[in-house]
Image (tube, rainbow, N blue to C red; front, side, top):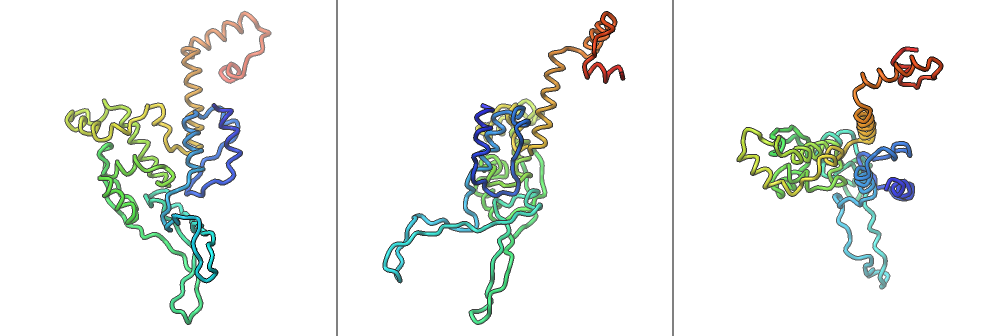
Length: 266
């Protein structure tokens, strides 16, 4: 699977511009789990839902002046994202550079069209917490339609969330759902309600812990897991070092490995 992904990543000829991206080298490709890499590639190549324009339903239109059909140039506007978008829920909205004409007798002037952002106090039923989040009217309408913040975060694709905060919340929600015994442990009735309402989003814990992690954090997590597995296979460190010390006493000319050298300070 890893070799397949390595062959796919360089062939992505058109990465969709987003507020953040996923890139890694061949060395990291060997240690990152396949499910994490699949989600990253899907994010990088997925076409986001149109936000600032209405896509044409057909590829051709009839031009009255030319008396013939002409192709439709359905080109989405170029968006620019700021760091604030990573810390809020903007629903794919961004900054658009354009022009504005105050009247037909005056020349156009450059202008940057920015999304209208407001601070909202939102509650998560799964996490049982309130959050102060910068959001747009579009996001609030979607949250209202989907009946709550949790449903909006869990049903919206990462490419359309386009927010590190949104993915952090999604990871925390999925980790909580993957451990039902920790959901409202003092309130069984509430726990049952949460599992009934959001149980359809549950995924295995080993996958939930990787959802939306930046590549640097994912690499650090992968290295930590590899180190923990090696230590578990080797047994307690005191037994490992005792065996290494005995071997050195029996074989004074033996060249110690890097770990033994560090431990003995020689």
